[in-house]
Structure formats: C-alpha cells, structure tokens
Image 1 (cartoon, rainbow, N blue to C red):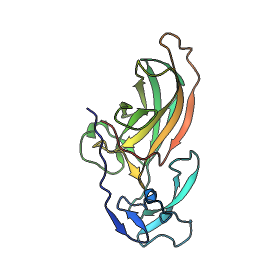
Image 2 (image 1 turned 60 degrees about the horizontal axis):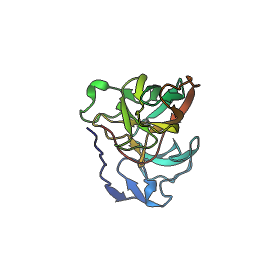
Image 3 (image 1 turned 45 degrees about the vertical axis):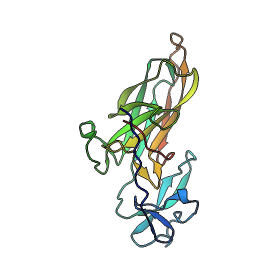
Length: 207
C-alpha cells in the first residue's frame, strides 16, 4: 500500500524563515538560510554546515543547521551493472553514513538516525516506487512495462514510519543512471557507481 506523508510546515521568525526541522528553508525564495563558514551569520543555537547542493550534483552549499543535529545522514549507491531487461531485477549496493538500516523497526515510530530507504524509478513519488531498501545489497525489480532506454534510479533515506528523511526541505538521496533493454536482449552492461547523496529533490513518498 502506497502513501505520501508531508511534515507540517511549522515556522517561526528568527532572522528569516526558519524551519523547525533544524535548518533555514530555501523554499521561501530568500537566502536567509545560507551562511559562510567562520561567520556569525547563523542565529543562536545554529551553526554553519556544509551540505550537498539540493539540485546540482557534486556542488556544495553552506546552511545554518540546528546545533541539536549532531550528524547529517548521507547515502551512496552503486550499480554493478547499468543495464537491465524489462521485468528483471537490478542489483543495488547501498552505503549509508550517520544512519542505520533497521528492517525490524519498519512501520514503527521514527527514531533519529535509523530507518530504511526507498528506491524509485526516475522520480520520487508513490507511482514510481520500486522497493524498500533495508540492507547493503538488494535486488530492485524493474517493471515489465518500463520504457526501453535511459532511466535513473533514485534511493532516498526514510524513517521507520516511511517519511523521507529531510534536511532543509530536501530529501537525503542518491541517483545513478541505468539502461533498460527489451526482455531477452541484455548484454550484461557495465557498472555505474559512486553516486553520493545528501540533500536531493524535495518530496515524501513510499510504502
């Protein structure tokens, strides 16, 4: 059963629009959440942290983050083969930092720093959800009606209750390209690896 959960946007005025999740929220169209390392740009109780840019792979931003957040989770994914047939499984290898997979706690209450991940095809949403990821290596089923050609596999960290882990209004995710070929025509393909995820595209979705 699929569902989408959105966290309430409770805000307070403190040197700009400050999200109670612990970061200035960039979605309000201002730059108040940005900062410079070593400066005093952040309000009391917040510090300037380096984060992955939400939309530019490999780029960084500096953002005010609550001092109560001791570590920001990250996810890295690898595909031993970047080619898969329609209706077949794509092997996914996942490494996380400052986050623990806990399959037994799925469907339970959120616990900081633990949960699982969701795999998606091309975009994050309940219609593109592929599989729950609960360990370092899983087989991700590719739909039999998936379009032949280039696609993206997106892996997003999720809390026990399936809300996607978010920092500053952006999900913690990683993305890699792969190719879908017609059933019976696969040549094995090469590998695709090294995709590192920090703050990804905004959104919550998954089972």
